[in-house]
Length: 96
Image (cartoon, rainbow, N blue to C red; front, side, top):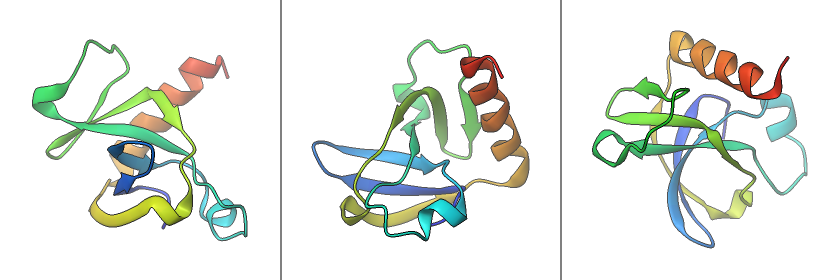
């Protein structure tokens, strides 16, 4: 899995996640990947930092680190502009 990919993740609960950790980190033996939750547009809850991405909305304020073995299927890939918006939202959240 690579940064910018949206995956179906089936672990403690089924969800979609946009990979936000770096490709260098993702290629290591660390068993987890950092993701921001992605939801279908009709399931969007109020979030001022939400970023649209095709049929989905990325929720930078809903982060998790699921196990790599839980990643079942790549369903989409975010473009560069979307990833810039997500990165900006993450910087806002972290006051960077």
